[in-house]
Length: 164
Image (tube, rainbow, N blue to C red; front, top):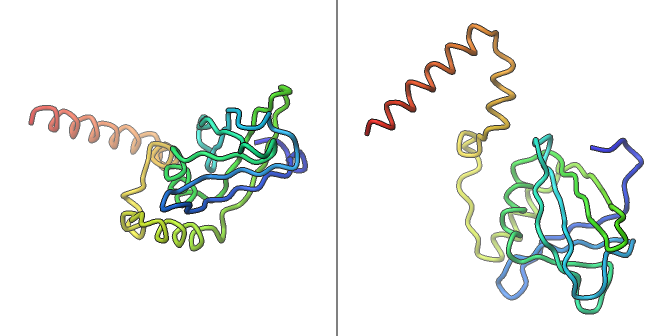
């Protein structure tokens, strides 16, 4: 992430519009012409690489944009993180960026998802959301001998699953 104080003013919204989830980005800076696509990157916590999605400015705005296709995946990613970093690639080859903590985001995001009729799996079970990033972080905490033991067990489990 860039250093503190280097962020542009960017507002993220997740709304339910006509029973469809929509991700909206609002910026104080010019993004691109009206009704034009652009790249929007986001990274939850310290993921290895940002996720890029194509957004489109509204037909009446050059500073406000939306995406319907990836809104649910974005909302679910926010629910599983503690902070989000976003980057917008503008038509002037300028990159707008912003970061925000997700401390109080769970309740409003869950409410919008429910209003839109989207049911999430039980988030109280942390193993359901356990991914490669978390695994690598936890693995690094173990001593080398325990890392090898764990990796050997995983290898054995994969072999057993392949034989089924």
